[in-house]
Image (cartoon, rainbow, N blue to C red; front, side, top):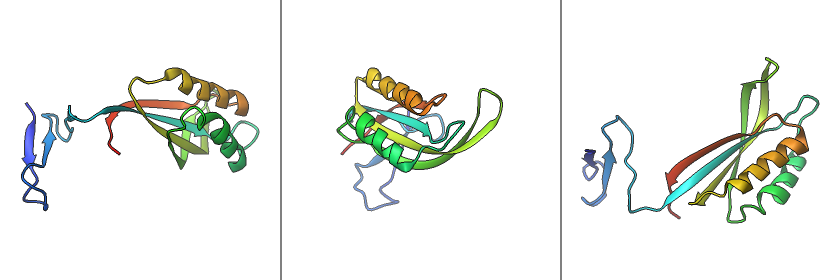
Length: 138
């Protein structure tokens, strides 16, 4: 059974505003009344063995490949990451993270198309994909 913590003493909320915390410390309980969404995060490295992918090339890929598949919207974050290449060397590179919120069910085909096109177009070894169920409201 989840523990319920009343926040009415901590903020100007009415007594009907509660934060539910599960028996596992710090893990929030999902509200069954809210709509379930899927959060897709795609991590695109911006370097290959021979060159860096330019901002203009990224924008073209975003405009012509990602946006038409998800015209409802997405967020792109500039980032920096590192990973161990299949040949055993540590690769450090600039990256872009595309975050897409989708109502269920998930259209996996569109996501795979984006991944395969990016790998083919820019000679990339992989694109990291993270899929998480979330609750979202607009």
